[in-house]
Amino acid sequence: MEKEFHVKCAKCGHRVAYVTPIAGCEQCGHDWLDADYNLDALAKTWQPNLASRPFNTMWRYWELLPLQKQDNIISMGEGGTPLLKATNLGLMLGHRHLYLKDERQGPTSSFKDRQASLAISAMKEAGVTEAVVASTGNVAISYSAYCARAGIKLWAFLTSTVPADKMRETAFYGTEVIKVTSTYDRTKIVAANFAGHKRLFVDRGVRSIAAKESMKTIAFEIAEQLGQMISEDDTGPSRAFDGPAIHPLGGGQARTAGRTSRWCVPDWYVQAVSGGLGPVGVWKGFRELYQMGFTKKMPKLALIQAAGCAPMVNSFKADLEEAEDVTDPQTRITTLATGSPGAVYPFLRNIMLEHGGVMEAVTDEEAFRAMRVMAKMDGLSMEPAAALACAGVFKLLGQQIIKPDEVVVINISGHTFPVEKHLLGDDWARTLGTAEAAALASHSPAPREGLMTALNRLDGRVKRVVIVEDEPDAARLLRRILQACGKYQIFEAQDGSTGLDLIRRERPDLILLDLMMPELDGFTLLEIVKSEEEFRDVPVIVVTAKELTSAERRRLDGQVESLLQKGSFTEEDLLGDILEALE
Ligand SMILES: *Cc1c(COP(=O)(O)O)cnc(C)c1O
Ligand SMILES: [Zn+2]
Image 1 (spheres, rainbow, N blue to C red):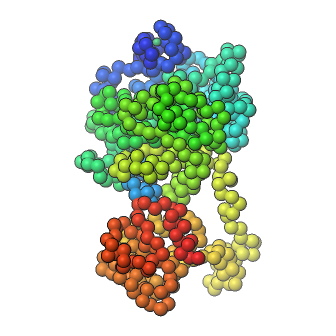
Image 2: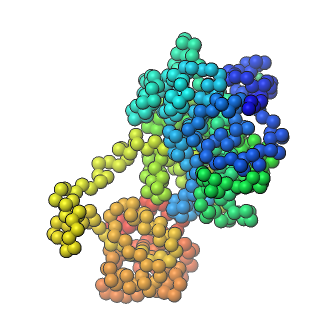
C-alpha cells in the first residue's frame, strides 16, 4: 500500500507531492518544510481505523506519518507508552492532575526512539546506506539501534561532555563515534561538513520532516489516553482522574470498532527543551487533531531549559524576536545543551504569544533534586533532562502559572545510569559480613545474638514515629517520605483513639497528627497527650488540610512543633521540620 501526501514550505506555502527526503523549497529555497495531509478526508475514516488497531507502537497513526510504503517501517515497539498519573507527587504538591508520558519505556529509553524509527525508515525508503548524525547523546543511541536494524552505517558526532556511558552505548551498536571537544552547536557544523565531504546523508534534526512528524505521535497518544482516563460525563474543572493508566497492549482495553473515541487535550504539555524538536512536533500533532475536529482546544506549552543554557527562555523573557545564542553553555545536563536554537525559537515564541504558555529555566541542582523526589515519591527513575521538566513544573506550580485544576502532562525519559553514582554518594547500601549474613539466614527459631546484632545494624539508629491520619492517601504519603529517608520506624493509626493507644504503647520520638478525624479529633488527642506527664515532651507536627480559624490556632499555640498545610509542603519541608523536632 502506497500513501500519497504533500510537503509545504513554511515561508512561501509552495506545495509539492512528496517523493523522497527533500532538503528545501524548490521555489524559494527555504528549509523549513512541513508534511501536509488531506485532513478533511482523513477525519471521516481515521477513528474507526484506529479503533481496530492495538495501542502498541506509534505506527498506529500510519496515515499521518510521512512514509510511503509500510514495507519500509523499522519498528521496535517505539511509542504506545503509558500515561502515568503522579499520585504521591500530586498529593505532595496539592495538584491532582499530574500525568507523566513515560517515554522511558521506549526501546532505548527516550522519546528519540519515535524520531529514530521514522527517520531511519525514511532513510531506508530513500535508499540511504550510510548516514551522519550530531547529537547530545540520546539521538545517537536511538539512531544507532535503529540503523543497526536497518543495515545502515552510522557516524555519530557527540560533544565530549556527553557522559561516557552514553558514548559506549552508542558505540556498542556498531556506530562510529566521533567525540568533538566543543559545544553541541559547533559539533552539528562539524558533522554537516564531514557529511558534505564524504557525500553522506546527514540528519537535519528539526529540519527533517520525519523527525518533526514522529513527535506528533506523542500528542496523538496523550489525547487518546486522557480521553479514556477522564470519565465521559465529567466535564467540569474538578474532574475525577483516578482511573488506571491506559496501556491496552494486547487489546484488553481496546475500544470496539466504530465507536467514536474521545480525544482529550491537556491544559499543559511540559518538556525540557534543547533544540525544540519535541514541542514543534507535538504542537503539530495537537493542531492536526484540532483541524480534524476531534478536539476543541490546543494545550499550552511549558518549555523548560537548564539555567546554564537557556537561550529560548532568556530571549523570550527579554521579548526578543530572534534568539540570543548562548555560546558557552554552563550545564552538566548535556542533553539540553543547545545554545543556538535558530528558527525554532521564533516559531515557538509565536505559539506562546498566540496561545499562552511559558518558557522557564531551572538550575541543574533543582533538576537533580527533582530526580530524587520523582524516584522516591512515585518510583520513577528518570534522567536529569527529564527531571528538569519536573523541576520546572514544581516552579510553575509555586508561581501559580499552572493552576491547581489544570491537567498537566510531562514528557519523561530514562537513562539514569550515568548519574546515579554521583547522586547517591557512597552510602547507598549497607553491607552484612559473612557471620551476620549466616545468622540472618539461619532458620533457628530462637533469635541468636548474631541475629539481633545484624537486625540492629540494618535498622541503624532509628527514631520512632507515630502517624495519626484517617485519610489513607495522606498517610501513605507521610509514610513514603519517612521511608525514603530510611531512618524511621513508623507506626500508623487511622483514628484518634487508636492513635492514643498507639502512642501510649509505642512511646514514639515524634507524632505526626492530622486534625480532622471523626470522633476523637486531633485537637482533643493533642490535649490528652500534652496532659500526660510522660508524653508532654514528645514533639508533635500537625499536618492538616484545614484552613485554621484563629480560635483553632490558639488551641495549637505552644503545643505543636510545626504546622504543615497538606498539598503545599514539599518533601524537604516535612523532613526539615521532623529533624528539627527530633533534635
Ligand atoms: C532530546 C531530549 C530533550 C530535548 O528535546 P528537544 O525537543 O529536542 O528540545 C529533552 N529531554 C530528553 C530526555 C531528550 O532526550
Ligand atoms: Zn518556499
